[in-house]
Length: 304
View 1 (tube, rainbow, N blue to C red):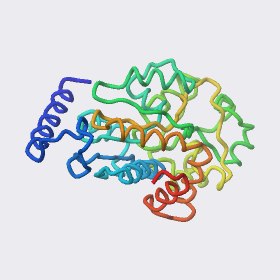
View 2 (cartoon, rainbow, N blue to C red):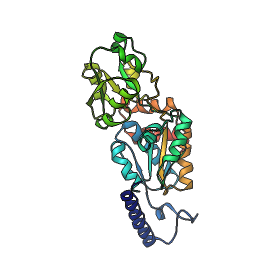
View 3 (cartoon, helix red, strand yellow):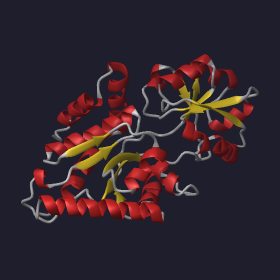
View 4 (spheres, rainbow, N blue to C red):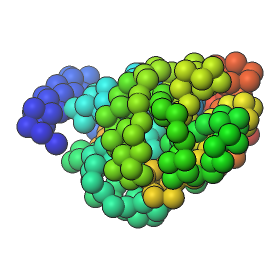
């Protein structure tokens, strides 16, 4: 953590401590009799991505069912926007993804498999933050093409893109152009020259439309996105390990006490790969709000 962020976090925590002392002499982390009204609200955030918002809402509702007060700060943006806020101490709990988060803090990491990535992430997490139990649920970055494009060039893997003689154009959120899995990463890992077109919907319907229209011929779409099956898209195999294992994992501040940690870890234990796809499909196909999807899931898994 850099000096500016460290000072910011100290200032935030100092202000928080004074406010808490003024409101109550009880410490909810040490006083077992402390109630939710004497505890500071837990700030739960999410990416500007419907799947991430659903998981954040599940965390929030599960904690509320256990007596915690929640301040929701949802649909904030992408990693470059919200991680400084988390590191500064203004957000307490956030659903993250093991591989991309590790790569953000350690761009040169050699970890690729799930357990190795999780262990490396635990070591890379800055002071004042920690990752809770990772879930079995994965939402992996992937390079995706249309079925027509895959069949035209006989594509099954990213390496097969070397066969393509027309210009390759990758579509994704603008920050993806400079991420390790952007054009530079494609060049380093596979020797491919790839252009880039920004599409600001996190691999959503605008990205899928651009693929189908031929505006782009390659897109970064998360593997748990139901549009892959619905639109008959093809995910290319990553034979060089460019993408790290990406399991849903809660990123927490020191404000998350032992009881809250237990609640969130129970959510992670219940969240499965197929279950995450189902949650996402309810958002995409049924157009339900995240709060409704989360409430139904919590009820089904008896976590309320």
